[in-house]
Amino acid sequence: MAMVQERSSSTALGDFNALVEHLHSVIDTIASQVVNTIDTRDPSLVSDKPSTPASSELLSAFRKFTKLSDEFSSYATSPSEHLTAIAGAFYESTALNVVSELGIADLLGKERVPVNQLAKEANVDEGRLRHVMRMLANRQVFRETEYGSDVFMNNRMSSILLSSHEKNLKGFIGHWSDDGYRSADSTLKAFRPENANKSIFEVHHGMSLWDYFGRPEGVVARERGNRAMVGAEPILHGGLIYDYDWTKHGESATILDVGAGMGGAAIELTRKFPKLRIIMQDKPEVIESAKKFWETNAPECLPRVTMVPHNFFAPQPSQISQLPSPPKVYFLRFVLHDWFEDDCVKILKNIRDVIPSEEAGGRLYIAEILLDRDSDRFKYMVSAHMMNMTGALERKEGEFAEILKRSGFRIMNVHRNKGFISLIEAVPVEASKV
Image 1 (cartoon, one colour):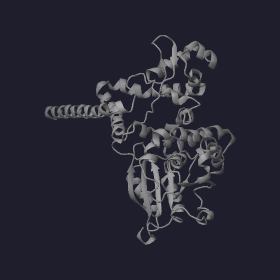
Image 2 (image 1 turned 90 degrees about the vertical axis):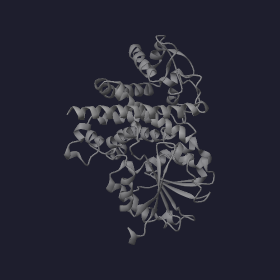
Image 3 (image 1 turned 180 degrees about the vertical axis):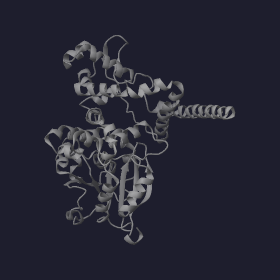
Image 4 (image 1 turned 90 degrees about the horizontal axis):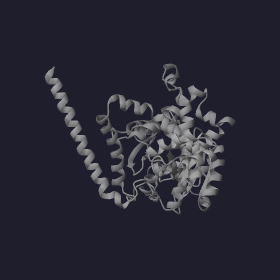
């Protein structure tokens, strides 16, 4: 027994030393490149420079650093401290939602504002707002000019809470920290066997998220969900747009964006590739919102975009195949993670029925988070959020391969980009080979 204990301690020490060595290596990579991407003169993060590094190597190092830091903290803290920090994390997300809803970033603007003035303008209790602002400043969101001064200002992190920011995170924060938080209260109840085929949201509200979105009381949540996808684009889609050559099928190729939402990814594609054409499909109410969004944010791209109301559980409309240049490329971004496996197969089979053969250039692109051994906390949070809101989860590559096989496709390639999203490239398989 003593020998087993000694071996166990030795193994633990070896694991710790390996972790430290790995962490040092990652820090060295960051230190050697970060000067060129982030303004290190101001550690308070006041810089207006973008937060997304240009280098794939550097971004990968940042992701590893985050994961390794969490792992390292499990050695540096007691189990009690570690678990209580996890248990209390919702207070931080709640605080973030409060300042987002109150428009604190807008009230601050470019000024340094005393908390009593902020409280007065927001019509809230000064003491509670002070506590929330200090909690968030401790997490590098906002900056107190000097601890105890009660004077706060925006910084690089809080700047994306400004309403004037084209891709502000207000919708995303509300979608997670309000809509998601409310329904998450029923998580334990949803884990019961009788609720296995329901999302946590459905268990809590008595209806699916999609049914709720279609009701008058769900309009605010639906619009917030649409804005959430737009706001999250910088952290999710950077590599998807810029690391992959979308002109490989022709500079003026047509891409059919299935379940396009507001078309946040489509906007970036049309801006990056000036001859590319996009067909956006989504429910009628989403398409109506998307039209207004494009008219405001990308009117110059509208001539190359066609918006078609369509439910992807129905067969593709005949008008698509009758176009002068029918699409050969089909694209689904953050669609399949909303649905159970059988539903995913239904969606994909409707595409399989109309997509050209591999030889004719038919391609299916699926943009999703792929889970693997290196997945960090954010990816698992996204997966948990999907389990909450829709009942589905983020998946591993092998799970996508099985869904595609059932739908008449096979994976040709998996493109891992700078962002959190991977791009699965699939081709149709002849029926005799399925």
